[in-house]
Amino acid sequence: MPAVYIDRKGNIRFSWLCNDPKLPKYKRGTCGAKTRKGQPCQAPPVWNKAEDKPKNGRCKLHGGLSTGAKTEAGRNAIRASNKARRKDIEKV
Image: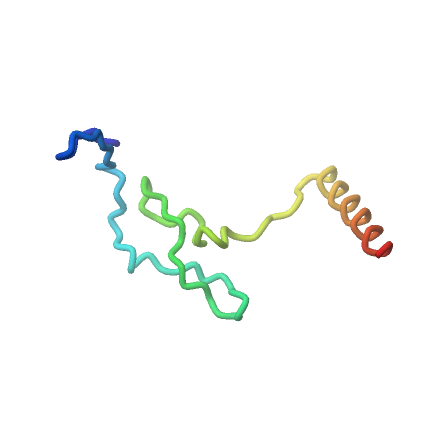
């Protein structure tokens, strides 16, 4: 819930009062995704302030893996895209 107040200079400011996370940042854990060096990412996960827990356990850079196409139409679209890309590569 936001609170509205006026600071010393007369500017209107907003502040979040009730949705501040209760768990300190250093206790929230790390992303853990594999980096290009092969080591786990040390960034903190994206935090859900309302539930005071990580949204999906990954940082803002890694976000988790794609689940891929679920429908047959989606899979066919991916196949068509891959075929078109393959033809472009063979021309070069």
